[in-house]
Length: 410
Image (cartoon, rainbow, N blue to C red; front, side):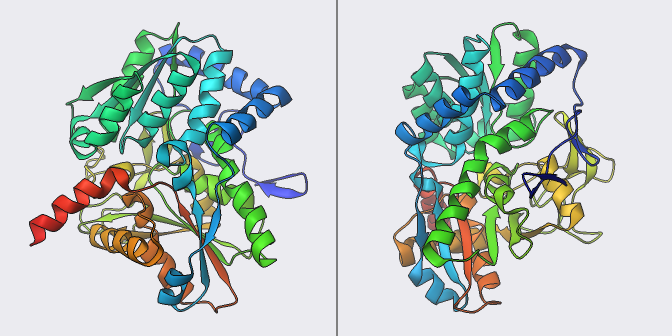
């Protein structure tokens, strides 16, 4: 942690490390393009005209600021602290992913790249990438695991409608990890004209830093909004964590506020054993929690089997189904600044239905993981306290999946 403008911030060192985590573990062919990307991002970061265009697009194209909504019926149900929902589901394309996609598309254009590639799990990042490529007239290719394409058919069609080519990945578990592998392979081959638009706060430096910077708008707005509405800071922030972009975006502007608990919720899946969940910080020897390792260019906590091979993962939500977590999360976890809970598939489905019935808001299954844990945390506080849940996306994409799961039960 370092001081900056009298506020504590978490910044990586020059090699992209937060403590032991992060860095660059990539083939030699990617070193030069990553160096070029880092240079351009650092220039853009201190360029007021870049910041102005980014903020203007977020306002006029994406619809920011997103509201901070007092969920009174959910608060009553929890019987403790008042619950507020940061409504990222109301962003253009239906999730927080558009914030980062806009920022990186501006960077791609600045670098003169005509072709953009991306990976996607739940499809929201793919849709956001296809959207900004349509806006800027860039060629777009999205890699998606076959299993995720099955679960998220609506988003596949949306991407195609926006002009993107969606490439089906049949390798491995046919999910997000495998889509990232294919995207990296493409980038190595076509680096001269291709920009890789990574969707979460992971991968090799500068991606974890860059994605966080483009997502910090969530926490900046939420902090100003809660102070305006209640006159004080919340006691806790709760957000789902896959790679960790929506959560780090919410948490980062509150890092210096020691009174605010920062709580990430991982996918507890359908059981405790290896392969049954995607909870990297799960504790206990038999639980199959993560160990420090390298996956897809960065060092962090990684779910591994007894031989150190990348473990299979499972979550009802495609967007949380990933074996590693962003390096800044790993660093903040070890510092004790952030804490991590997990919610299983059944709890996520219960949160999904509860939010719909009590507040008239259908959340993404990813975001729904945060709802029951947030209610439990709220129970530890009084009605004078507040908690913010980051509602990172809307649930249209999940309705068919939930309907299918319900019909199998009956």
